[in-house]
Image (cartoon, rainbow, N blue to C red; front, side):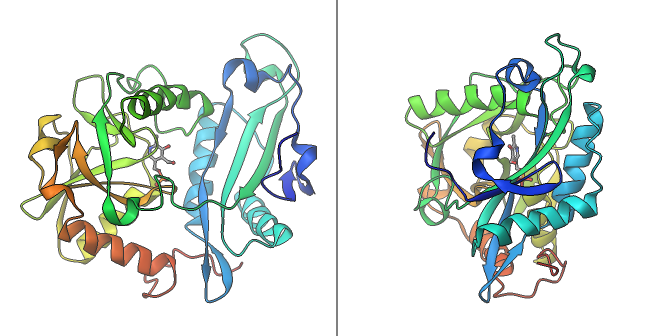
Length: 307
Ligand SMILES: Cc1ncc(COP(=O)(O)O)c(C=O)c1O
């Protein structure tokens, strides 16, 4: 077995050793992608681990599980406490949390209803997702040849394991072409999102991001950006826009739990805003990072206080 990412995890109601997280080859999830999950950051604030927007992530997990008719049997409050317990059991000062609901053993057919539902929470230490310089210097992205899932195929607003086959195609194509990340279009050819991030453009001081109907995962970080930008006095529009609006933008950034707020310095090798982090991105990013690290007022109550 590879080096464990952590000493302990949470499985079906109790803290367990990392090795107890092994799954049998007949598990439904391995064959049919039947899992839903979350990605949550826990930041170190004044020496204490504080989980970021825990409620919102667990609410999205609840909705994802409901869409796929998975009954976890664990109330959201219970899972919130389990997340805190995993951080504590591993003694992590800061980490990334991965609640996961999946269909295990039971039956080999596609019908998921016959397989037992398990709930696990993993944690590991994770730094900057798109590379150590990404937050400051920005990343190079390419528009993907792969489209995001059309809304009547698989629901993009469920954070489901199977959806990440689409993300993998986008990400691997981008990396093999020399980009850090790919941005995919939706079924209408309008901008959707990155393989694991939402996208914002800035043009003439107005922020734009594709709406829920553009095959996006409605990101928790996206919501942070919208609130912060409006609070800073910027206009923010959730509206569809075409690919060329990316090339015409003054600034672009992508955002997500893993990527936080990462400037995009080029799209398809066309420099954006002089190829460096722009002033609006810097302002939103500084405010976001200031809040998550406890240096600025957490006016929306995003850091868990019960940790
Ligand atoms: C496909 C996709 N879009 C957007 C996001 C951003 O969502 P969040 O900010 O909630 O992490 C993620 C990350 O979870 C993602 O995987």
